[in-house]
Length: 267
Picture 1 (tube, rainbow, N blue to C red):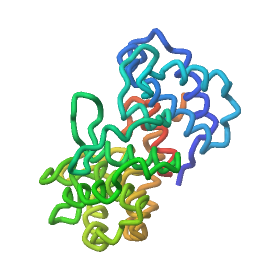
Picture 2: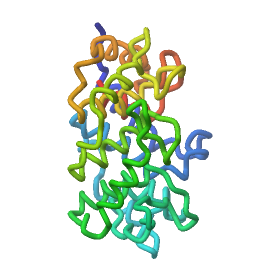
Picture 3: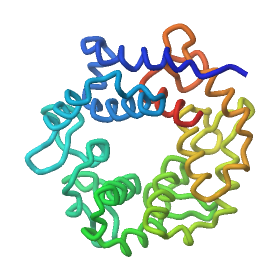
Picture 4: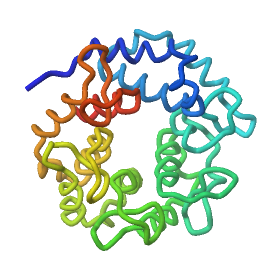
Protein backbone atom coordinates (compact mmCIF):
# COMPACT_ATOMS: atom_id res chain seq x y z
CA UNK A 1 0.00 0.00 0.00
CA UNK A 2 1.22 3.52 -0.80
CA UNK A 3 1.28 6.43 1.61
CA UNK A 4 -0.14 9.93 1.77
CA UNK A 5 2.52 12.40 0.59
CA UNK A 6 1.90 15.03 3.24
CA UNK A 7 4.76 17.43 2.42
CA UNK A 8 3.91 17.56 -1.28
CA UNK A 9 0.25 18.24 -0.51
CA UNK A 10 1.27 21.09 1.81
CA UNK A 11 3.49 22.50 -0.94
CA UNK A 12 0.62 22.24 -3.43
CA UNK A 13 -1.85 24.04 -1.13
CA UNK A 14 0.62 26.88 -0.51
CA UNK A 15 1.33 27.20 -4.24
CA UNK A 16 -2.33 27.73 -5.14
CA UNK A 17 -2.43 31.14 -3.44
CA UNK A 18 0.44 32.36 -5.63
CA UNK A 19 -1.36 31.54 -8.89
CA UNK A 20 -3.86 34.40 -8.84
CA UNK A 21 -3.56 35.19 -12.55
CA UNK A 22 -3.84 31.74 -14.12
CA UNK A 23 -7.05 30.48 -15.77
CA UNK A 24 -8.09 28.18 -12.94
CA UNK A 25 -7.78 30.96 -10.38
CA UNK A 26 -9.80 33.42 -12.47
CA UNK A 27 -12.73 31.06 -13.12
CA UNK A 28 -12.81 30.06 -9.44
CA UNK A 29 -12.55 33.61 -8.08
CA UNK A 30 -16.13 33.55 -6.77
CA UNK A 31 -15.30 30.47 -4.64
CA UNK A 32 -12.18 31.84 -2.97
CA UNK A 33 -13.61 31.79 0.56
CA UNK A 34 -14.48 28.13 0.11
CA UNK A 35 -11.06 27.47 -1.39
CA UNK A 36 -9.44 29.10 1.62
CA UNK A 37 -11.51 26.89 3.92
CA UNK A 38 -10.57 23.70 2.04
CA UNK A 39 -6.90 24.67 1.90
CA UNK A 40 -6.59 25.78 5.52
CA UNK A 41 -8.47 22.72 6.78
CA UNK A 42 -6.17 20.47 4.76
CA UNK A 43 -3.14 22.18 6.32
CA UNK A 44 -4.70 21.82 9.77
CA UNK A 45 -5.33 18.09 9.28
CA UNK A 46 -1.69 17.71 8.20
CA UNK A 47 -0.47 19.74 11.19
CA UNK A 48 0.90 22.57 9.02
CA UNK A 49 -1.48 25.44 9.73
CA UNK A 50 1.46 27.55 10.89
CA UNK A 51 2.70 27.61 7.28
CA UNK A 52 0.33 30.50 6.54
CA UNK A 53 -0.02 33.97 8.05
CA UNK A 54 -3.26 33.54 9.96
CA UNK A 55 -3.66 37.27 10.65
CA UNK A 56 -3.60 37.98 6.91
CA UNK A 57 -6.20 35.28 6.30
CA UNK A 58 -8.55 36.70 8.94
CA UNK A 59 -8.08 40.22 7.56
CA UNK A 60 -8.96 39.05 4.04
CA UNK A 61 -12.01 37.08 5.26
CA UNK A 62 -13.38 40.17 7.00
CA UNK A 63 -13.04 42.13 3.75
CA UNK A 64 -15.44 39.61 2.19
CA UNK A 65 -18.17 40.53 4.66
CA UNK A 66 -21.16 42.38 3.24
CA UNK A 67 -23.02 45.17 5.03
CA UNK A 68 -25.98 42.76 5.42
CA UNK A 69 -23.84 40.61 7.73
CA UNK A 70 -23.25 37.80 5.24
CA UNK A 71 -20.05 36.88 3.42
CA UNK A 72 -19.35 36.67 -0.30
CA UNK A 73 -17.06 34.20 -2.04
CA UNK A 74 -14.45 36.93 -2.48
CA UNK A 75 -13.97 40.65 -1.89
CA UNK A 76 -16.73 42.57 -3.67
CA UNK A 77 -18.91 39.51 -4.34
CA UNK A 78 -22.54 39.19 -3.23
CA UNK A 79 -23.16 37.40 0.08
CA UNK A 80 -24.53 33.83 -0.03
CA UNK A 81 -25.16 31.17 2.59
CA UNK A 82 -22.76 28.74 0.85
CA UNK A 83 -19.78 31.03 1.48
CA UNK A 84 -21.08 32.09 4.86
CA UNK A 85 -20.55 28.62 6.38
CA UNK A 86 -16.86 28.92 5.59
CA UNK A 87 -16.73 32.40 7.10
CA UNK A 88 -19.06 31.62 10.08
CA UNK A 89 -21.69 34.24 9.29
CA UNK A 90 -23.91 35.54 12.06
CA UNK A 91 -27.25 36.61 10.62
CA UNK A 92 -28.97 33.71 8.79
CA UNK A 93 -32.17 33.23 10.77
CA UNK A 94 -34.09 35.44 8.33
CA UNK A 95 -33.50 32.87 5.56
CA UNK A 96 -35.74 30.24 7.21
CA UNK A 97 -39.09 29.76 5.48
CA UNK A 98 -42.50 28.93 6.97
CA UNK A 99 -42.15 25.21 6.16
CA UNK A 100 -38.83 25.04 8.02
CA UNK A 101 -36.62 25.02 4.90
CA UNK A 102 -33.88 27.57 4.26
CA UNK A 103 -33.26 29.78 1.24
CA UNK A 104 -29.68 30.27 0.09
CA UNK A 105 -30.08 33.98 -0.57
CA UNK A 106 -32.64 36.72 -1.20
CA UNK A 107 -33.72 35.05 -4.46
CA UNK A 108 -35.26 32.12 -2.57
CA UNK A 109 -33.60 28.93 -3.87
CA UNK A 110 -34.33 26.09 -1.41
CA UNK A 111 -32.03 23.12 -0.82
CA UNK A 112 -31.28 20.80 2.12
CA UNK A 113 -27.65 21.92 1.80
CA UNK A 114 -28.81 25.29 3.05
CA UNK A 115 -30.65 23.67 5.97
CA UNK A 116 -27.42 21.98 7.05
CA UNK A 117 -25.36 25.14 6.59
CA UNK A 118 -27.79 27.22 8.64
CA UNK A 119 -28.01 24.65 11.45
CA UNK A 120 -24.25 24.00 11.47
CA UNK A 121 -23.37 27.70 11.50
CA UNK A 122 -25.78 28.53 14.30
CA UNK A 123 -24.72 25.48 16.32
CA UNK A 124 -21.10 26.63 16.12
CA UNK A 125 -22.24 29.99 17.44
CA UNK A 126 -24.50 28.41 20.12
CA UNK A 127 -27.46 30.28 18.61
CA UNK A 128 -29.82 27.55 17.41
CA UNK A 129 -32.44 29.41 19.42
CA UNK A 130 -32.55 31.94 16.56
CA UNK A 131 -34.45 29.49 14.31
CA UNK A 132 -37.40 27.12 14.58
CA UNK A 133 -35.48 23.85 14.96
CA UNK A 134 -38.62 21.70 15.07
CA UNK A 135 -39.78 22.99 11.69
CA UNK A 136 -36.28 22.68 10.26
CA UNK A 137 -36.13 19.02 11.29
CA UNK A 138 -39.64 18.35 9.97
CA UNK A 139 -38.67 19.77 6.57
CA UNK A 140 -35.50 17.67 6.37
CA UNK A 141 -37.45 14.52 7.26
CA UNK A 142 -39.91 15.35 4.46
CA UNK A 143 -36.96 15.00 2.04
CA UNK A 144 -36.36 11.36 3.04
CA UNK A 145 -36.91 8.78 0.29
CA UNK A 146 -38.06 5.15 0.26
CA UNK A 147 -34.45 4.00 -0.28
CA UNK A 148 -33.47 5.56 3.05
CA UNK A 149 -31.60 8.46 1.47
CA UNK A 150 -32.36 12.16 1.24
CA UNK A 151 -32.69 14.61 -1.65
CA UNK A 152 -32.34 18.37 -2.03
CA UNK A 153 -36.12 18.89 -1.77
CA UNK A 154 -39.10 16.60 -1.06
CA UNK A 155 -39.30 13.93 -3.78
CA UNK A 156 -35.83 14.66 -5.20
CA UNK A 157 -33.36 11.84 -5.92
CA UNK A 158 -31.19 10.58 -3.07
CA UNK A 159 -27.60 11.82 -3.31
CA UNK A 160 -24.62 11.23 -1.03
CA UNK A 161 -23.90 14.94 -0.67
CA UNK A 162 -27.49 15.71 0.32
CA UNK A 163 -27.50 12.72 2.68
CA UNK A 164 -24.45 14.11 4.48
CA UNK A 165 -26.22 17.45 4.87
CA UNK A 166 -29.50 15.97 6.10
CA UNK A 167 -27.95 13.39 8.43
CA UNK A 168 -25.51 16.01 9.70
CA UNK A 169 -28.32 18.46 10.46
CA UNK A 170 -30.34 15.74 12.19
CA UNK A 171 -27.29 14.71 14.23
CA UNK A 172 -26.64 18.28 15.37
CA UNK A 173 -30.26 18.70 16.45
CA UNK A 174 -30.41 15.32 18.21
CA UNK A 175 -32.90 13.97 15.67
CA UNK A 176 -31.16 10.89 14.24
CA UNK A 177 -34.10 8.73 15.34
CA UNK A 178 -35.78 9.86 12.12
CA UNK A 179 -33.15 7.97 10.07
CA UNK A 180 -33.53 4.29 9.09
CA UNK A 181 -29.87 3.53 9.78
CA UNK A 182 -29.77 0.04 8.26
CA UNK A 183 -31.59 1.03 5.07
CA UNK A 184 -29.51 4.20 4.63
CA UNK A 185 -26.32 2.35 5.54
CA UNK A 186 -27.00 -0.20 2.81
CA UNK A 187 -27.61 2.55 0.22
CA UNK A 188 -24.38 4.30 1.19
CA UNK A 189 -22.34 1.09 1.09
CA UNK A 190 -23.59 0.42 -2.43
CA UNK A 191 -21.78 3.60 -3.47
CA UNK A 192 -18.44 1.73 -3.32
CA UNK A 193 -17.39 0.50 -6.77
CA UNK A 194 -14.81 -2.10 -7.87
CA UNK A 195 -11.93 0.41 -7.79
CA UNK A 196 -12.64 1.02 -4.10
CA UNK A 197 -13.81 4.57 -4.71
CA UNK A 198 -17.25 5.91 -3.84
CA UNK A 199 -19.81 7.59 -6.07
CA UNK A 200 -22.61 9.97 -5.15
CA UNK A 201 -25.52 8.03 -6.64
CA UNK A 202 -26.13 4.84 -8.65
CA UNK A 203 -24.39 4.37 -12.01
CA UNK A 204 -22.02 7.31 -11.55
CA UNK A 205 -18.21 7.37 -11.58
CA UNK A 206 -16.34 7.32 -8.25
CA UNK A 207 -14.99 10.62 -6.95
CA UNK A 208 -12.56 11.28 -4.10
CA UNK A 209 -14.86 13.91 -2.58
CA UNK A 210 -17.40 11.22 -1.71
CA UNK A 211 -14.80 9.65 0.55
CA UNK A 212 -15.87 12.42 2.92
CA UNK A 213 -19.59 12.67 2.23
CA UNK A 214 -20.22 8.92 2.40
CA UNK A 215 -17.77 8.07 5.21
CA UNK A 216 -19.02 10.90 7.41
CA UNK A 217 -22.62 9.81 6.93
CA UNK A 218 -21.75 6.19 7.74
CA UNK A 219 -19.89 7.29 10.86
CA UNK A 220 -22.88 9.33 12.05
CA UNK A 221 -25.18 6.30 11.75
CA UNK A 222 -22.58 3.81 13.09
CA UNK A 223 -22.27 1.82 9.86
CA UNK A 224 -18.78 2.78 8.63
CA UNK A 225 -17.58 -0.81 9.13
CA UNK A 226 -19.85 -1.88 6.28
CA UNK A 227 -17.45 -0.73 3.53
CA UNK A 228 -13.98 -1.91 2.50
CA UNK A 229 -11.77 0.79 4.03
CA UNK A 230 -8.55 -0.64 2.58
CA UNK A 231 -9.80 -0.43 -1.01
CA UNK A 232 -11.03 3.12 -0.43
CA UNK A 233 -7.66 4.22 0.97
CA UNK A 234 -5.89 2.72 -2.06
CA UNK A 235 -8.25 4.59 -4.40
CA UNK A 236 -7.48 7.90 -2.67
CA UNK A 237 -3.73 7.27 -2.77
CA UNK A 238 -3.95 6.46 -6.50
CA UNK A 239 -5.45 9.92 -7.05
CA UNK A 240 -2.36 11.73 -5.72
CA UNK A 241 -0.04 13.76 -7.94
CA UNK A 242 3.16 12.04 -6.87
CA UNK A 243 5.40 14.76 -8.35
CA UNK A 244 3.77 18.06 -7.38
CA UNK A 245 1.32 17.09 -4.65
CA UNK A 246 -2.43 17.50 -4.58
CA UNK A 247 -5.24 15.01 -5.08
CA UNK A 248 -7.66 14.68 -8.01
CA UNK A 249 -11.21 13.34 -8.31
CA UNK A 250 -10.00 10.15 -10.03
CA UNK A 251 -6.61 8.64 -10.91
CA UNK A 252 -4.69 10.57 -13.61
CA UNK A 253 -7.01 13.62 -13.54
CA UNK A 254 -5.87 17.16 -12.67
CA UNK A 255 -5.55 17.93 -8.96
CA UNK A 256 -7.33 20.78 -7.18
CA UNK A 257 -7.72 22.14 -3.65
CA UNK A 258 -11.28 20.84 -3.30
CA UNK A 259 -10.36 17.19 -3.88
CA UNK A 260 -7.08 17.52 -1.98
CA UNK A 261 -9.03 18.55 1.11
CA UNK A 262 -11.62 15.78 0.83
CA UNK A 263 -8.98 13.19 -0.05
CA UNK A 264 -6.85 14.02 2.99
CA UNK A 265 -9.95 14.14 5.22
CA UNK A 266 -11.26 10.83 3.87
CA UNK A 267 -7.91 9.05 4.12
